[in-house]
Image (cartoon, rainbow, N blue to C red; front, side, top):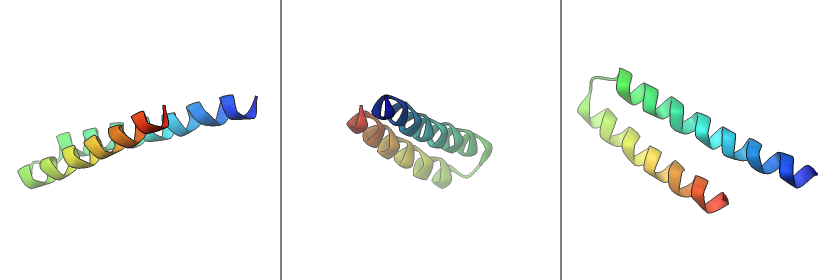
Amino acid sequence: NRSTFTAPKRGDRHKNIIVKSIHSSLRSESKNNIVLKLITIKYFLHVYYKHL
């Protein structure tokens, strides 16, 4: 039971980070910042899918 509860929590944490970085990139007007955020989003998605 423990493993089934810890796995989704870890996934949710990654999802929250992705969502936060998307929101902050949309809020920021700097193009460089958006590019940087997209790179971090791609990285977190890669890490997230690795854990699935």
